[in-house]
Length: 500
Image (cartoon, rainbow, N blue to C red):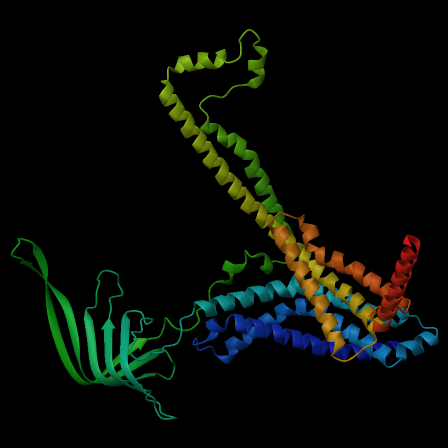
């Protein structure tokens, strides 16, 4: 490897890994802010939370790679231009394209890595990450009793506390609870109402060492129970009612043990999430797209044949047209006479048949539209396996050219320029996806819209950089503005002389 290649690559890798880490961190913070309500009070352990962050960090890598390549290549050539190293290279007979050659090879390698990552790692990370996120979202919150409010998340129990006193640090007996009311509710679905009520002056709540059972240690209270005795009593109005007995038990120290089986995270079957297009690789997407398209064609062709059941009479148009002896309309009257259907009933029948065929047609159109949208989604995801890889090369082309033009390194102007182009890439991708999913654009055109727009921009900037263009110098535009004002003033003076 030549020294010039070592110089360029040495300036590239530092900003690349730094930018990649920063972008992944920003996307993870976005995830946390978006789902913060789902994580609070779920009592997640560090292992589960770490696995969730790991999966979503993997998912952000394909999105972060274009921005990392854009910013690092812009900073690399911006630093070379700021310290006149590009000028020295050109004076030694080394062109800009030759100086970009090592980064071009790196950009192609990163593009290939991005395609492999999107096709192999991203579907697995999507499946693991979103299934774990679903389990976290559906998990019940940890037990959190609030003063004066009934807590109903424990199956079969409704608990209210009048006042809570925080336990001392290091205490294993839990907070002191005052004014406890506990309703035991039937969970078998055969009975209704509250058949057992526990009232206690005070108590403590804690869990066992394995956190599988919740223990209420109650002091000075009563346990009221109602149960049926299978006897029937008759009321004064003649009605019958089943007898009920009440029992009260007083206690000074009573322990109520409740299972916490319904709390915590329960892993669902990951096969339930495999239908989504983000969980498929390129081969699976191609297979599903072909099967969905064949299903769509089969159903669309069968609509005409199935709709015949909604018609009472079916004619062969060719045969009717051949009957030249029958005038228009008389053959219909002859058929109606055979049925001898009263005209009001006939009109009602016709209206009912028209409504049936309209409902049938509408339902089929809706079903086929949704089927076609699924085809578009799978096609779009197949194209994105390639578009995200190519966008890495496009961002390199823009970044390297912009760095050679503006000749500014560091995290100032390059960061602003990189963010502007990345936002353009992101917005164009979203717009293309939206139009493609709605059928307003051909799917390949919507998927490749961002690259088709930005690739010519990269070629234009490369052409300007090779000719040492001062495209972003303020003096160029100031001089052009002054020149234009002088020409306008001269033209205006000539017009005034001609008029006079």
